[in-house]
Length: 416
Image (cartoon, rainbow, N blue to C red; front, side):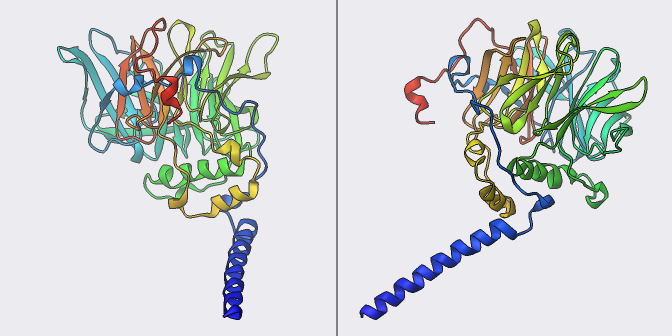
């Protein structure tokens, strides 16, 4: 009996050792997607902002109006039409997954503000993440397209005509497969946030599955890898030259010129922060932290009265913990997709002043508006898009001098 007990212990111990050994070998030698090798990540201190002050937990976004349409999925950002007005109606458009382009018009009614779809969706090639109207034209857009780069789009008579403006850095020839966001200066100069530099062949991904099958995988793997593969790029239409302003950026997926165009704001998504790159003055060419926020930072947009809106799709408290353990992150990188960490449902839009101070935050903890990736202000309304949702949403911009509705008391926060 004693020998049998000892044998059982040895077998169990051997099994445990075998599992530990197998996990160690997998984490060390198994091939990873994109052949990445995770490194130790040094996070800023603090790694994220606490939910205090103007970031106190609230439920303002729970009061937004959701707008759906057939096959609408994943509208990253919302584009406001140049002819949009309170008299003719607020006109907006967006590109969803599968390359589909949608238009909507909204007017104030007895039942509140309502948005209606205009016409049928138009199919374009691959995935457009961001679009702005070109030179005030209703049917012409400049777009950031994955994987085509910076692309001019004409939507007319149910057709989508796409022309590549730039798809590579002029000097090095490096392709801009991951043009994630951009902004256009008054003189036509375009500033682009190119998130990654993984080599990819778009021809390997038929149809419009490129975004779903590649970009989100690449984002997840790069976050686990920890390498700063992004670039801030400048395209000059006068010279047709595309040049790198800033390399070594950790997944920049939002970019915005300041109101006076003296500096650029860009997000470093996994670092939970917005950076400022000075374009003019004594500090031209220098970079500094503009704001540290509570979670993953996405698109940045100018707001009224010299402010800026920043989308925080999800809190990011896990990565700073995993930052010191590259082998654990390597193991996570090779695991099946169904085992991947999922985003927290807590999402928010943050309003910053010209110095990066938090003036206001609009939040939702329920997942109803999960993963908001952009906020565009126009005529007192805030239009929000999301890579993850099958709708877009809007609400009236809350006054700055009022506390947010639905504040959750400190006693309740401990349960979140």
